[in-house]
Image (cartoon, rainbow, N blue to C red):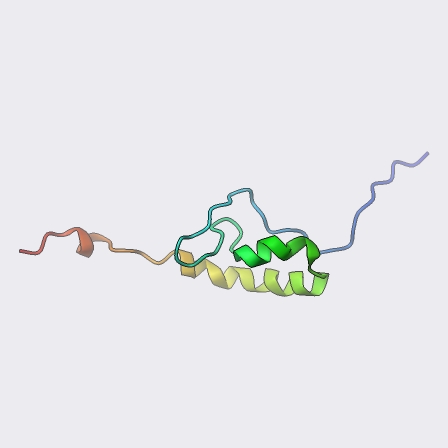
Length: 77
């Protein structure tokens, strides 16, 4: 008897188990998907998933914008 593992031929989820949605960008800080994309992921076809996966790296800079920094903390009198 062969130990056969059944696998589906589809795009894997980019989820990294860090599920926190950025309050203004509305993108998950772990996988960079939108709430809509996360919700619909299991219903998407592999083409739509692949297209989203291709675009995810370009979303990272949206979440790394600095808010304030030293200039915002310095008391200007």
